[in-house]
Every structure is written in C-alpha cells, then in structure tokens.
Image (cartoon, rainbow, N blue to C red):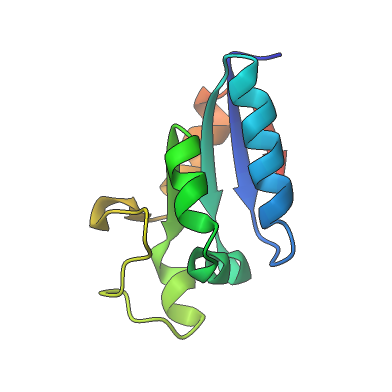
Length: 104
C-alpha cells in the first residue's frame, strides 16, 4: 500500500466507497486526502460525511461547486472548517504530492 492516497470524488453515489477505501488505506498506514467537487459536494450533507472527516487525514470540498449545487457557502458542512471550503487547487495538490490517486 502506498504511503499516501488522494481520492477525487465527483459522483453522488460514492460515499460508501470513499469511506471503505479510506478505512482500508488508514488500516495500512496511509495518509488519505479526500476532495469532493461538482455534484459530489451534495454528499457533504449526508450524516456519514462528518465521520469520514474524522477518519481521513484531510477532507475538503470545492466551494464553487458547493455553491453551484445550491448551497450557501456560509453553511459549512459538519466535520469541515471554513478553511476546508477550498478551490480546485486541492485537486492539484493530490495529483502532485500523493503517491496514489483515485477518482470516483
């Protein structure tokens, strides 16, 4: 298993997969970063999202996508901080700095 895994999430039916992959990677000692964009930002309203934020080393969402999905950017999802309402630069960080990259 790689030392670090970046997970790029764009789909709305993938939260359970993200949680399972994150658990498996953490069990192997990997650093896990998850970035939600486009329609996947709606997953931040799922009750299990906050648990993922506790499990992964870093979780952030694209604030522009969140807004385009009809959410108020001042309504920060449970488990995140205002700083984690980020830009697509988070996606670039995963591509550049992480050993493995997964897109869902």
